[in-house]
Image 1 (cartoon, helix red, strand yellow):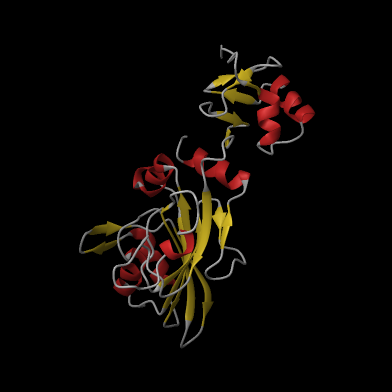
Image 2 (cartoon, one colour; image 1 turned 90 degrees about the vertical axis):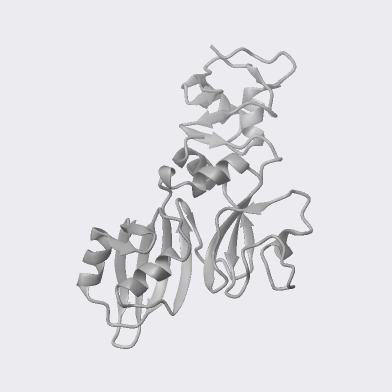
Length: 246
């Protein structure tokens, strides 16, 4: 059983502050056995927790109860480098967060010519797991390629393509638009090797002309404009932590 922290804060107050719901709603969640603190179900009202150290889950999703952890989604523009600084003075991700109090770092990379969703955080363990292929976090890309694209391309990608650094099998592939001169295809991968989407499509005869990452797991780019950052929602954060077992 989870031991109460005598100098801590009441659990329902912590949940309410984290945006889970009102204190009354939080009390109902606790009574229904939907809340875990450090891996233990807590059903007793009035339990006290240390917001700085407690790990709280509601319905299996992690709840962020400290303001120290930051999770941001950036729509990286084409031409911007995925680095926190650049000694050649080129535009880089670090330019956008240099004035922030937190020390953020990017989760994985997008090459300069690739646009789209890039996550930034100061949670090193989350970042490590999101990047590690063993957790199989899916990344979705939209690629513009010379068309038309035959159905055989999808079959080849799902069966596996041998690249110079080993075979790659896509997790998903769709033809979104298919014209004689230009096609749009969606590629879903949990791989994180350098230029993997570009190399894959080049290997099947459709070199990439434009590439945008549109999703990482439960986080979608949606209508976010290039160069714009937004804080992840509580639901997105919870799903990311669930995906990697935190």
